[in-house]
Length: 291
Image 1 (cartoon, helix red, strand yellow):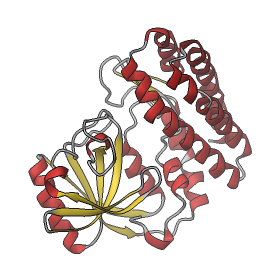
Image 2 (cartoon, helix red, strand yellow; image 1 turned 180 degrees about the vertical axis):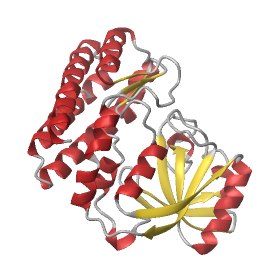
Image 3 (cartoon, one colour; image 1 turned 45 degrees about the vertical axis):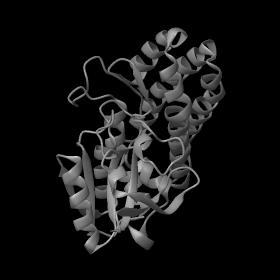
Image 4 (cartoon, helix red, strand yellow; image 1 turned 180 degrees about the horizontal axis):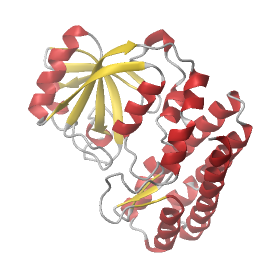
């Protein structure tokens, strides 16, 4: 939405953030189907650079400052806002408490006590109005964000003409590093990544809390499966069929666990989680052949 007519498909942007290239068990208990140490801020910065763009980011220390900064920035054009907690965006039905799920929206204008914005969630919600008072709670630090309480990105500028295929090819070295779960990245104590994270989570699944099952069914599984499906299509289009096959199998395996998460079928979840750990190692092997 911020890059305009030259923007690549959404799935390509998601792939360039490196989000499909791993799994992390944040703090030893929160399952997120993205790489160890990854967060949306790091992913967005990587994708923007790979695509040949630059932008100006602003971080605010308080919710009041965030709202004032957003209203000021909107005078010059649309503003990318996030990560915000999806559960605190009051325009979405049932959104009345923090959900721990990161989200980005594009703010368009402010006035008469409200902010108007495009929301890419679900069925897509264009031109959503939200009372300015409601937004004071929304820009909060979620589980995977390193910025607090809100970040805005403006002044997107294309500095290099890089095709989507070129960007995807250039991302492979970075992707391999993400998949290998680099130890130098800051993470909460107890966090695991990659195969080790899958194995530990599998051990926990028979006694996992209802809250974790809700996170899996409402956020982690559908988002993780979709991103892996996107990656499969992207790399198939670039001719990287081996990598595409790895992602396609991950997407199918992860997506098949959606119903089990809803039912609380721990045995099926355990088998699927262990299989995903095996497939993660296969992905690393495929990346090693390409980089």
